[in-house]
Image (cartoon, rainbow, N blue to C red; front, top):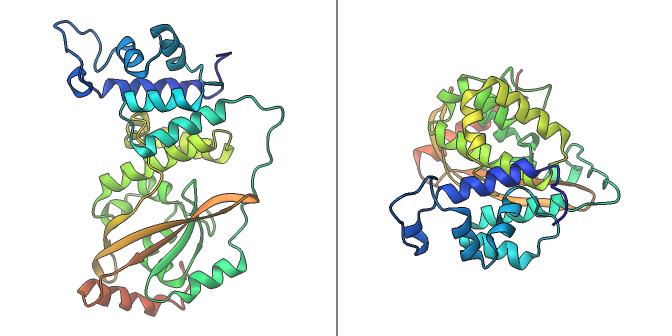
Length: 292
């Protein structure tokens, strides 16, 4: 399999964490009386994957470069990985492949003018575009009003707000996000997935280092190696002006070969509810830039 890649620690820790969460009963194996390790043994994963124990042991140590997709798929099935986890494993393998030169980093400017036109044209939903590091690179007026605590937070760098920094470094986030803990876990899982796709992203490494240093909760969640490629569902917010809001949250990807992948996100209230009325109240903030 060759020498271990630079992301060998991520490969090792991810596979070990997924192996540890499974029991023999879950995969149809006898449990036995004496087990010195939590979860499955390496040799059990090897049997389930159809490879030798020596081979799987090397894989778990980070020797993933050159491994075929069929074998990775077999390991993913053996470990009962979710779709997001399977994608993360394949991203780790892709990033581990040796390259003759480092590909240029996709451009990541502010949103192109047509994209800004698009999100500004939406008036009944809060819309923003974020990158894989969870920086908000574009937003409409309602999104800025809805997320005023974040845009006005000391964690916002100039005009660029970051969901992860706000979530873990600003105490105000615990009042704003009603489901703070589940949101925090989703935030970390999104960053973990991005780290698998772009292990060479220096800004991402710096962000993870900053959050790991300052926030014990982030360190604990980061060490769990949970991954998530998309974040959708119900958002419950306690807004400082209009009060309690329940909003649906949808996301779609915007990407092309010349720029980094970005996500278009929309928060919408159910028609005819008090949450829609509260969201409409926030439109009065639309003409006022955040922080003014």
